Amino acid sequence: MGCSFSGLNALYDAVNGGADVWINDNRFKVVRQLGEGGFAYVFLVREVITDASGPGVSAKFKDPSHISEDGTYAMKKVLIQNSDQLEMVKEEIRVSALFSHPNLLPLLDHAIIPVKGAPEQTWTHEAYLLFPVHLDGTLLDNTQTMKSKKEFFPTSDVLQIFRQLCAGLKHLHTLDPPYAHNDVKPGNVLLTHRKGQPPLAILMDFGSARPARRQIRSRSEALQLQEWASEHVSAPFRAPELWDCPSQTDIDERTDVWSLGCTLFGIMYGASPFEYALGESGGSLQLAVMNGQIKWPAGPKPPYPEALHQFVSWMLQPQATVRPRIDDIIIHVDKLISKFSL
Image (cartoon, rainbow, N blue to C red; front, top):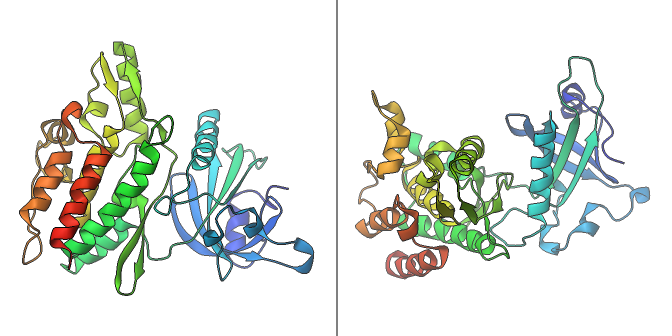
């Protein structure tokens, strides 16, 4: 069936109590907008079930834990303007079908429909992706709020949040073939606060996920990879080999390990360890990344243990071949958890 309307105006009407949204045979009422970026809009929606509508969308779920008790979900709407964007959305759907892990955000249902609108309309398709909803925001949202209050996560929470991200990434890295997420960063980590427990951390947005291992055997292949990375991998979290790729090299899932090290820094201090270069006169983000130049800001009092700083530096080795793999990182973080957790 697809969706019952097309175009942004109709969607904004729905937010104000107008038309409902259909994803295949399931009907949802838009409650409010949660966020937007580029040509994607995220909404809180509530499933509308009538006697005639059957068992509802939850009948499709492989994991019963994904069923919402109050019928609310997050719906991402993507306005697709060209064939490349269409293939990206299709790839995100395909990759999401490969995994099932509590620290990776599952895709619950989806629909892609062709649309025809006014002459000035620039998009040709609309994609509707349905996910579980997490209303406590992203790790980035949380750290920015804390930063404004001069607050920090305690060491034990830093390690527990990070450990969960490692678990999710290990699942991707041990697929056959291994996959890299390619855009690990605080803005792609959902947090859910739990009473008496560390926050639940869930990695999301698999639009850039690809098979992790690539053989680069020419300058043109290296430049193609750099161009792809410039479009799909956030610059402050992008590994050095994606900034300046050698003409003869093997790329693997350790590009994610670099991003993971930047994200651990972000859990502690609310930014990438290289973003300072953007604010310096004559500063170069790429140069800071290529040289692994980390600046440690003032932290909580008492400060984070030096072992945590060394852990970040271990992951942020500019030479990918000496960077640790996810299994090594998990062994190390478990030792730190046993040492520093309350």
